[in-house]
Length: 316
Image 1: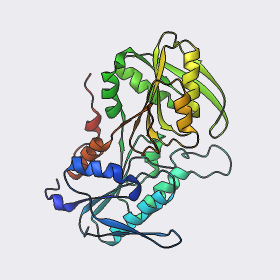
Image 2: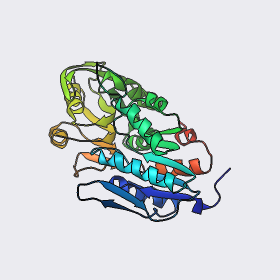
Image 3: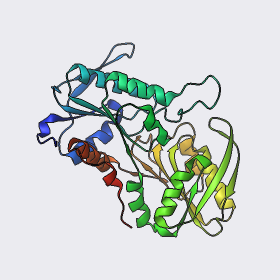
Image 4: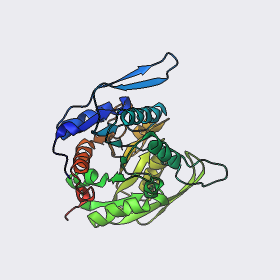
């Protein structure tokens, strides 16, 4: 059954993602709902929804990047809507934080992605909409529907505009092979792999290139760029192996620590990212593509009980 009355749909934004939620609301064709964030002197948050959501399909847009207050704010917003008798609550999380903690890879560590999934469900979310999870199996951590949007529908047209079929695609590590292979398959291009070894988080001990890059224009494909250590090291190694040029595409620009300095000092031609996380500052080497239209279309399809997967059907 389609929601025929737009008054039944409410869109809200957390404070961290207002820049993106405004664009989503514009594409969706209705303004963001009113809410205020009150804080106690010690920083404790108290979000207040300033309009009725009783019986409504309610969407909260908030990425859960650092600080953890962004996640806590989202949980409080969901809880407030549940207690205000919202009919159906969807957490729209363009960047799903803690996704890198998706398994127990050593003794006595938390599985952060599962914990966040539990928290969202406990708060009262009926559905989660996100983009490019670090590991697809995180969808299985939820007992509610998860709409997993793909950034390929955003990156493909841009790559086509700069001659996508001429590129060779590369995975910056073994874990990203599936992601890079999708691009190589779509463009009918070659695939190479950078095999890295870490001694600890954010520190690379060694890296090798598997595949031929001599004379090639290479595009590195990743989902998250944090300190940019892996990406810039892979780019330099590929150039050292004889490539003509190296670009990179990455969905979520976390860009912490020395990331900006590393990117600007690197030999990357360009880094193309999505706006799931706002840039801390502009850079001549970083191009941002908007996800707003895709999220607006996905929200509309949810409201109209239409397929989400149809948004990613590409004819080629």
